[in-house]
Amino acid sequence: MDRGALFLDTFFKRELIARYLPDILKGMVVTIEIAVLVVITGIALGLALALIRSLRWRLLNIPIVAFVDVARALPPLVLILVVYFGLPNVGILLPSYAVLWLVLSLLLAAVAEEIFWAGILSVRKGQWEAARSTGLGYAQTLFHVVLPQAVRLTVPPLTNRTIAITKNTALGTVIGVPEILNQATTAESFSLNATPLMMGAIAYLVLFVPVVMFGRYLETRFAWRRA
Amino acid sequence: MDALIAQFFNLDIMAQAAPLILRGLGMTLLVCAAVVPLGLAGGLMAALAGRAHSRIARFVVAALVDLFRAVPPLVLLIFVYAGLPFAGLRLSPFAAVCVAFFLNTSAYYGEIYRAGLDSVGAGQREAARSTGLTAWQAMAFVVIPQAVRNVLPDLVSNTVEVVKLTSLASVVALPEMLYSADMARSVTYNSSPIVLAALIYLVLLWPVVRLVSRMEHRLGG
Image (cartoon, rainbow over the protein chains, first blue to last red):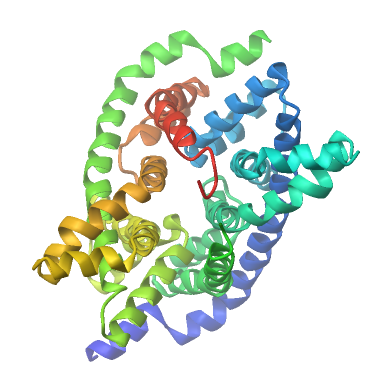
């Protein structure tokens, strides 16, 4: 066999592509489902925490800052293993996909809180004062004046961090969530061939290259408007 | 409450597992010492190549950066460690971790350097050239130092991400901190060893996270 044929046989074997394509597609569905859920709950929780923090009550701020710092300092896989193996022993049984969703949502919430809070801070004080002086209440000022300006600033960094965290759905394979990587490594160990791994990698490219390019577009689009 | 403490903060089990976990910490630091400089150098090369005159070079670099940012690092690692042996390239876990994370972190550092280089005005380079510096001298002594200073918080913050990333090496059985802690967990049926590892990560990274958060507390500032 010449080299080209050997390469194709190792990474792009046709029978194996046909055999394992349904599994990889199933994995893609699981990855997309968990990623979408994580984005929704993570960003909603992060925004809620940032709004609570904008009230500037010390008693609430300290736990929020502590939560954000801890979430930023811990590797996601460490948290996944603690939750997955620890909770059953204290009587809480969660299926593995729920553990993955929970941990990634909390991590995204921490990052999102930090970014939204930085966005709120970066809106100048005069904006608050002007809005309040026209008779708007605190909440009205926050929702109609400050947040619309803050959110614009947060779009590029938030997009990048969200992409990074949704890619962590691949960590689910360690606790047996049947997402893309899990399907690919299972198929690889059955077929003794690297083709399923290549299919898994391509599946991620299909999902994430458009998202990465969209993130880059947002970054350049929003950057030049910044004062 | 007692069950919770016995399961997550069991001091006896932590003390038993500590020597193993500390040895793992040594390996974690070793991996960081390899991957962080590799990524910083690779990222700088990617950012400089992204400004090359040749259109083809620019396109290739942008495509590679997007490719390695789109593939989850664990997928890349498993591909290098478990996939390449089928093509006759067998790497040790340590080498596989270095190769996979070099590619991944270079892409991320590269994007940060790119933003930094863009933030330095063209006048700086022109002024440097007009004083007689060569193109490389102007880049190395005038543009790059300012670029790095402008994106320092991002560089530090990405380095925190790299340290956290090394925990994935446990999946390919490299005996770093998480791997050691998980081994202790599976022997003792108790989560305290992983909690201990988490606490060590926290002690190592929390000060840096605080620092970054102070440096970047305003967007676009």
